[in-house]
Amino acid sequence: MTSSSLLRPPSHLPPATALKHSQLAPSILENTAGAVSNSTLQSLLAPSETPELWTTYENLLLSCLRTGDDEAAHRCLERLVKRFGDENERVLALKGLLKEAEAEDDATLEPITKRRVALLRSMGKVDESVSALISLLDFSPTDAEAWAELADLYFSQGLSSQAIFALEEVLVLQPNAWNIHARLGEVLLMAAKASSQGDASRRLSEALKRFCRSIELCDDYLRGYYGLKLTTSQLLNDPPKASRQQDSDGFNVPEPTTLQKLDAVATEKLAEIVRQNSAGKKGWQGYDQAEVAAARELLEDKSMTTFK
Image (tube, rainbow, N blue to C red; front, side, top):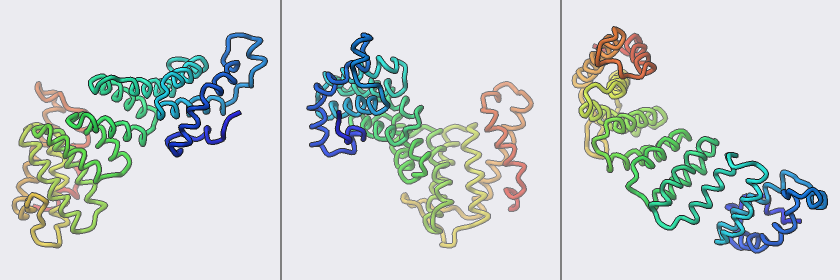
């Protein structure tokens, strides 16, 4: 009935093959109409319903979108909706693709793409979510929220360098976002653990700077102080072998005495947050309890207080 290549996603097919599939769409849709017909007689005479049939419809829809045949794509979608319903996750994702193809301007396309990204992510389709976000940022490069989500997706896949780049783009757009400074510090700190000695020192230097900037912008930001203590602890317990490593902006890793002072500031503030929050003090109850618990555990960790 159909080419075996129709059982593979059209994004993996050469353009000529996708065009051929699109041209076959009218005859394929006509020959398989009975599989989703409401007529008992027509259903009996039509090919039996198989998983391959629904894969064919889905991939035929995608091929039609690639070649600009929106009408045939809508007919494929109608077949899938009739079989699986309007709320099926894959159907919703395909609807989003159709709406993107038909969007008349960037303003219309932006919310459609964001909804599709959220849906793809909920389905565990990380690669497709990344591709959709990159497409969104191609026409809306000043969307800080999209850059932040892209960073999160990259980091979830262990792509630290890409996540760092995306977070830096957020800070270009929102330079005073203390939470993003801290998040970038966290990614740099974790990336340092998997880096060579020289690169690790550079990343730790940058992480230290980001955490300091975070608490400079928000004096009570727990994650900023938590990251600062982790970073100073690591630099003090395992100092860089090369003297006075610099980051790309010429920022030096501070002397041990300065690191100790920064560690003391972080320790004191974390202790205050934990103490006041645990006592139920007014004005100290807005913290995430999991973060408060993590701060308490960090303060109780003897390995974090071996230096004076």
